[in-house]
Image (cartoon, rainbow over all chains, first blue to last red; front, side, top):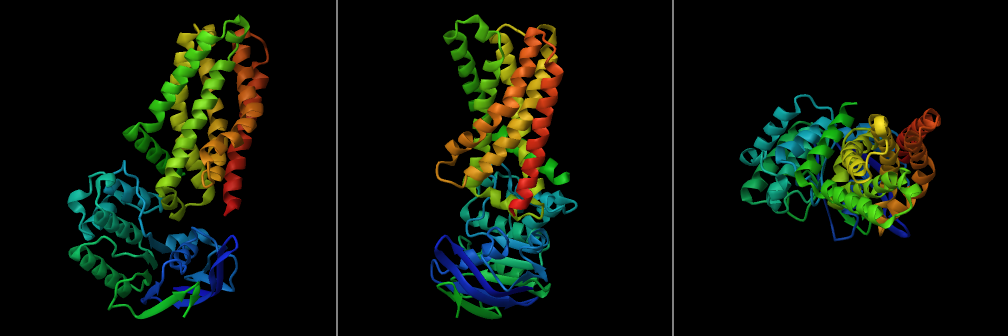
Length: 207
Length: 216
């Protein structure tokens, strides 16, 4: 569950987020749309603690304040960046295993391979991620976002570069996460028919 | 502790698969040592260990900056920051990961130095090597701290060295030079200088971890 109230973020003199009020319940998929530069990615990065807000009245993930309990918040969030970064010298399985080990997940190797199978990358799991195509990187990024069993998913353009099969796989996994009471905030320009709500960000404000 | 070991393994695996930083740093250190060998004719300069530490400082900082810059430019630092480990663990993991590579580099530099400058440490060769390994700890801690502050800035590659060299020169490097010089001259200052080196290392490692934790 995400709860934001009067959430502000600026970079220097440029105000990016201007008093965001947003609540996403467990098991809810919310689609966030907005023009380029409206602050969508900044909002996701501020919730997942990669950036910190300037001020807020309330900013919680599952009841944990973003600034007071950043580690608790991070452990509950699965994040897919617009261009998911990976170590090109490591294979898909090694990248995912590293992520799971950093999150203290037991049996990281088996779990990594299991999630690679779920996103359709099982036959490429030992290939270096530096050789992956854009769509394969996106699938790997999605596996990473899901693999540590987060309660909240923040996804920035999750369908970028995916083929029809990939889009279907990710959509099915999203529906499954929703059924498992995961709160999902989805930044996308595509139409997501299974989303519960659509909110629009206009110049840093929710309309 | 487990996450620190994971980060060390990651750093070693990435570097030894790409060999981008370590090979270039070894070549650079060889060139620095050879330049000193052919350009300095005054014996008193050659009989000191300043040349050894100049080579370790310059190439070591270059290696650490390369590792940190690579992490930031690829965006993979975000992966580490997004995991549920605390910031001090992240600092220690990155520091010890760089330290492992720095130990490999400084071992190569030490061997080259001993060969090119005809082993000046005599029977204290192993002790001198130990000092080199200890000196790398402070270098790695300050290097990672400086790189963390500088790499997001424009021209961060240069700024890292500008931050780190003055701090290291008058602390870790000075104590390390005193240690190795005392082994060459056989003076009794070794223990005091070594204690000073250990103290500087402890300050930089714990200080770096503390600063990383409060920076969040």
